[in-house]
Length: 426
Image (cartoon, rainbow, N blue to C red; front, side):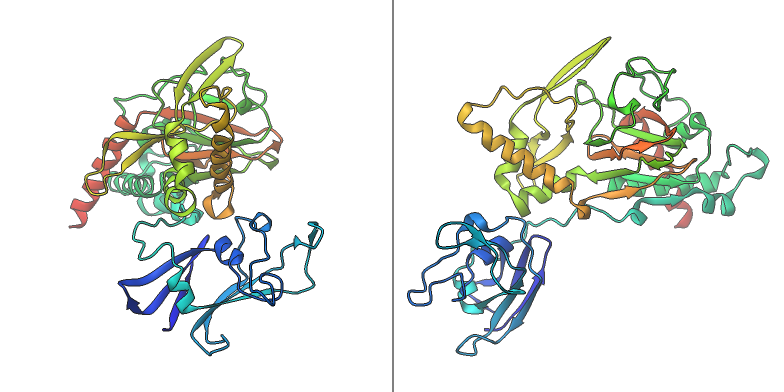
């Protein structure tokens, strides 16, 4: 029985040419394949064919060099051949030793793979989170060239015609609905005017204990309670904002007033997609722990303190009728306000930390992140319930204006523009 291979980031799908006992495909983790290598040149004993390789030496994030469908078994049966970079294995005294080989080859007969399949005909799989910045980018200059309202524009702020504004906001609706983040290039210098790109003039921003608009810069004098990382030039790792608040703002936008001289680039992860990937592709156990174990988010500043307790991944109360799964409603993730973990029994704490590490390592994969270097006049807006944001450390007088918005103000405003655009094009 022949087969074809479909390579995925963390596993491979073997699609069989013929269904046997209803099995048309099987998915295999790369670490499982490496552990079950049948070769007699280090992985199996030449005389007894018993396993020699120790599972502890196989990195769980191991990746193959390449995978090929072939017919190279001793009996010329259809096979799948996996090529690996060498890994250190234990020698006769238990010490790790790198074998003298350029690459390691594992040849699996297709029949053996089918007979040992542990994940067949999987339907509930998830792709990687969006990580192509071009998918979330809008060039405001292109819109203003086509739909500019010259009569009402200034050097600091280019206005669009009613038709142009509706098209712009329809684009925002699409980007935020699909990706949870939008990067707007060349938007302008007027933060107050930009607020109403996203909400109706009758609405307003969400003020916090920092103020109405945060001026994130090292020499900040405008905001209260600026004794926190955002007002330093240190790197700020992936997080959602205000995890310690009972009611968390649905959206935040950052307006670049001045970029850093060096560094300060922003990056984002669609955490809802990352959580789904964790659940079906990496570790359901880790997902279950992160959705059930409470975490203390404790903000302590000189003149402000707030505490909220919640799992990192909060699920909805009612299951989805289509899947019977509880959907993810909110991500609360902030390493700098995460309090001491005291709610887990001694014998289970290591397991919770392991789940946290699996999650964190996923988030810092390049293929999980959208990266954006903001220049003066650029804006990025993101869903604070579903998207993590971060920035690199920097030097120079970097200045970002940060504004929080209610989801209940943003979505109706953008949806109305989307509906107007659809109607006009019908």
